Amino acid sequence: MVDQLVRRLRKKRKEGCPIIAAHRGTEGGNIIQNTMRSYKNAIVQHAEIIETDIAKSKDDVFYMFHTGQEKKVFGFDCSIESMTSAEITRLKLRNSTFDLVDQRITNFKDLVNELSEETIITVDRSWFYWEQFLNYIVKNNFSNKVIVKAPATSEILELLSKIAPTLNFMAIIKTQNCIDILNKYKKRVNLLGLEIIFDDITSPLASKQFIKQCHNENLFLWVNALNVNDDTILAGGLDDDTSVLVSKDKGWGKLIDRNFDIIQTDWPLLLSDYIKERGEINEKDI
Image 1 (cartoon, one colour):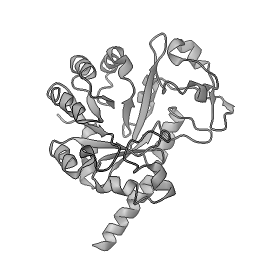
Image 2 (tube, one colour):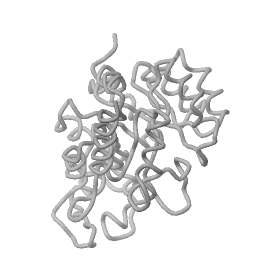
Image 3 (cartoon, one colour):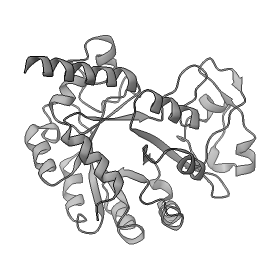
Image 4 (cartoon, one colour):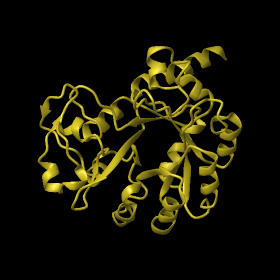
């Protein structure tokens, strides 16, 4: 039986417009990445999917946190993985102007329980802890509330197939080799779609032919318009920076024209407005 989450995604595809995913929620000002505030802010800005990261405390509590961001978020060098949950919950956070604020990072259970069921939760960077984290999802009956993302490697897919084979899974694909590995596990995992990463729009993985093939297999295609730094290219330069500073048509527009189903961005409201503008223009042209 197709669960409610997948039904919503398919309904959106039929409407002909992409689904907006918010990278680590939407931060800025006094709202900090990967916190409940950032997720609620993303929803206000019309994101339908929130993307989160997972880190595990020393005593095995799962938090919404991107490891390596400790100094930015807490204001000093530390490792969340070497701290207990009691120590973590005492840590106040730093906002965008690096001022200390009375906020805390969010644990995974609170996130799932507090957000509306209308919001789709996609979990990134959890595969480091999958032997524990997948069991945790299954034990707490969270399987129908989340999508997990991970690279398509034999080790990761083997774990998924053994622990949580029915969990909605989005495979991160960078090369044809990833596709070849994934094909061996298609019948053993619940493959919802592919997150495609490409250096150039001429990549075979970004071709209209490949995208059509994936859609024929009922797979959703996720693309990352976000910019994590100057050197990491996730969508062939058709990114947030190009869209916001140069031309939306030359960034997000080209991703929409390729029929990607989900666009992850740091600017959900701007992308939402652009999608509406395109729809209004198309209706006038009919």
